[in-house]
Image 1 (cartoon, rainbow, N blue to C red):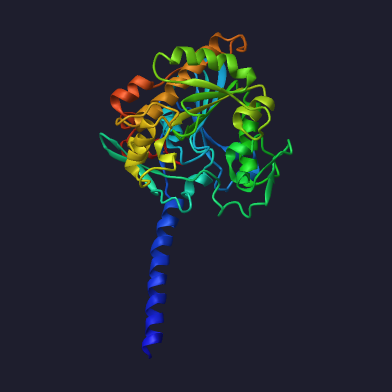
Image 2 (cartoon, rainbow, N blue to C red):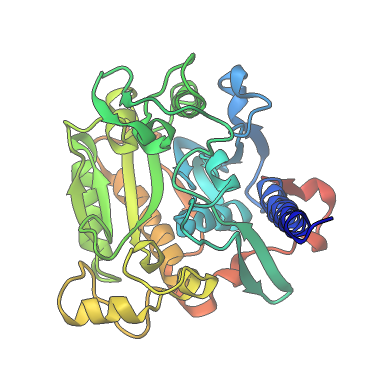
Length: 387
């Protein structure tokens, strides 16, 4: 065998090894069984396919955790993981599943509304595949995700995405963005069928309030805020006034001319009052150092600090960063604030109040996220769901 042929053979073998090793890591990530412990408030677990049968067996047949109140009342749907790289929303939803107890009304929680998006990270983004939250019993491991539906589950993208039913032309990749595909359609793409199933849940269960949990860049003006359409605006504004004593927050109007957004279409195509929360996540900004787990969870970056000193950021930012307990705590506290205003609002029909016990901002700041994550190994197998 000539040296040239031998060299090519060695290169081919090395390439195959890299392919196998790298492929196994991605396969394991896609199929990682992420445990969720059923807390004291959970009364049953459903799936999105219960509301739209064609989703059954697909990657997006997400779990729906139902927490029924001790007294009759209204209904609230909480969505985490619309964009799976915005991890505070997912963790806030899981903290609620594992700790919240409804007093009045029913709580429906979907931690991974874009479950497919959680099975792959952003291409060329050098994101970590997982992140781990430390607890007193060890650590809990979670999948890191991408902004959009995994192309393994929905492909190809069109040249232009035409939103249904409004007909607005959007960028091609938005056809895999959960938050551009509301209210969905029953015979559409996987992403559209996912939002359609969630809308069916809203309609069938008479959901009053829908809350979509997100995170945004510090260089983006729509962060540290509640986004709400006109019908929800008064509730959002009153919540902002009260929450402003705890942390910086403002309201943003839902644009009537931009279609597909949860805070637009949920309100237009149902009786529910939608809200979208944005917490500040430095990891998402482009001018940062390496996209590490440390940056994701601690939120400290030297380049953003330099940008902050030049007045280029839309939030206050210093060496304390924007740690995960602050971001999760903001979401939980804002949710409690919005529900409190809902109960006093003229929009709330008699008997449709929603009250719940749940960790808040100060609980998270004092104790960290790990204090509110339960040990899957300390409970029976019937108390653990793999999401």
